[in-house]
Image 1: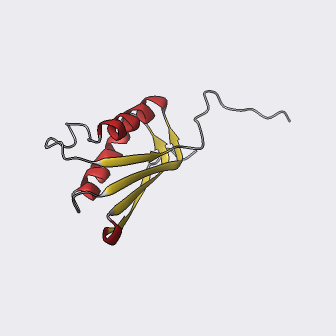
Image 2: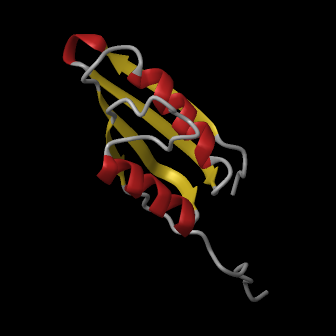
Image 3: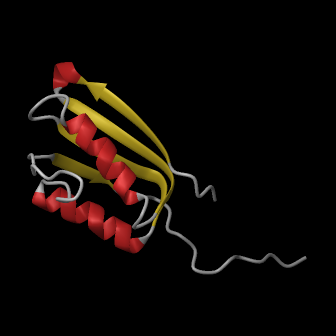
Length: 107
């Protein structure tokens, strides 16, 4: 697993949509990088539908809860967006779950 977080943003202003694609390991610390990118994308146009695609990322449970909380409240955390601008976030579920212990194969 690559612990480095890679983020790609796709924006379609004609349809008021943006997609933030994250790969790597999302922790309670690195989730702030996603929030910052989401804030920048959200500032491009009012009423932008923002989709966080974490389907190819390893996401810690606590970080996933933080992302879902932002989705439910439709706001980014106040430390990231002090103005608390409305932010419509959809979180695509991750397909992989972090392993709790390394898997060893018999020789």
